[in-house]
Length: 242
Image (cartoon, rainbow, N blue to C red):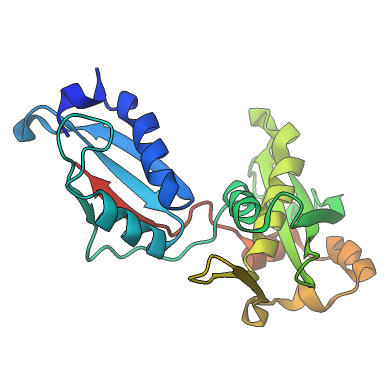
């Protein structure tokens, strides 16, 4: 779009784009940028949807339209774009759950949250920075669908950097993300949502009792981190607006 259509810069277009494209489905992100100097004045935006179907509907409906500015916009799906499938972070998982299940459609509880600092004394002996570690196990419940899912996460931070206060929150966040990875939301054409539990994503901790989960502190922090590391990004579908 022309720069004047978005006001003084790309930031002015983000709100307008979000309002227009959110009508087609839940948005993962909206980012607007100024054109490179060789392309002339103007802006472009990359809009990511959680759903590929929503992205496709938005592209077909909005391409060539005057959405909130004077000139028509070119809206296209990005083709040949390969992105590794990674786990969504806990905030994005909760956003999806609230959108498709409702705020009362799911709940979570902490099974255990324990300090496991000092279980990797070998690293400290080698002169590495002293760190604090918390291990968390969480259960997510979808009462209307009879689904229960567990997740385990490890939070770690260097004490010297003053990051110790956020370790518990980080452990809970990773455990919540881990639990959501085992839940499949199937959005039907009618708009109804079906829920399935992904047994293929289960790990050994899913077969433990709560008492056994609380005993996970006997496992070294390094082993737990290897088994339950969570990536902090998603794999949405995107459209480009120019």
